[in-house]
Amino acid sequence: DAGITQSPRHKVTETGTPVTLRCHQTENHRYMYWYRQDPGHGLRLIHYSYGVKDTDKGEVSDGYSVSRSKTEDFLLTLESATSSQTSVYFCAISALGGGYEQFFGPGTRLTVL
Amino acid sequence: EDKVVQSPLSLVVHEGDTVTLNCSYEVTNFRSLLWYKQEKKAPTFLFMLTSSGIEKKSGRLSSILDKKELSSILNITATQTGDSAIYLCAHPRDSNYQLIWGAGTKLIIKP
Image 1 (cartoon, rainbow over the protein chains, first blue to last red):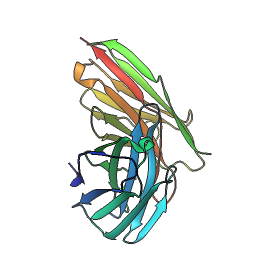
Image 2 (image 1 turned 135 degrees about the vertical axis):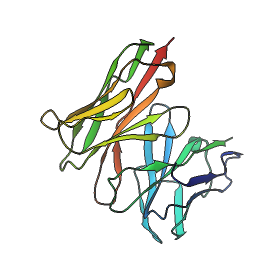
Image 3 (image 1 turned 180 degrees about the vertical axis):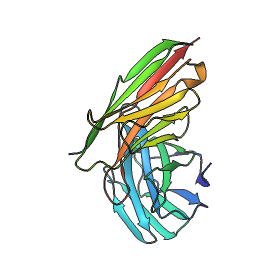
Image 4 (image 1 turned 90 degrees about the vertical axis):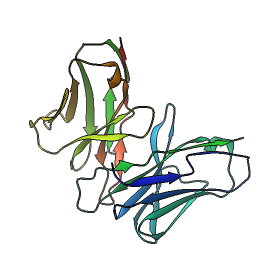
């Protein structure tokens, strides 16, 4: 298995509070991604990173920000959580020069009350 | 706009049956076609297909690409309850290594 961990694995928070999810990889892969997965919507890309300090928006980036200060860490922040952000969040990584395959972390289940 | 479409969206079969899942794509510049399996956790990578007509195989699972038909199939023979999962296919979007995901096929294997 690719060395990807996510923390926390489960979180319950209240509307309006900030939340940060962490993705950590030990594979030294260049690309990192944050997805959310909801019933009926499949996997949707929130933000991705193509190198340290290089990030870009995905299809559902509103209400989320990211940072990548080191190759191994990619942080997803919900500045002010809303109930619509209740979801399962997956981090994924991909190697430059690979075949585009992405490898996923175990996921974080976030509940916003 | 590039897209990936999977069919059927859901499928229920009995243990021992053979199933065929479909993935069709409409893309500007074909790169590869990827298959994933997702049980009650994160998606796990199954196959990557780049050449038409060449079958990739892993145990009871196999997949083949047909570039003429712009599609791929995933076959599972002698299904087991452990094959119950959502099967996803994807195509690379652009040079920043994003993937366009299909909606998935939810496969349920009844004992």
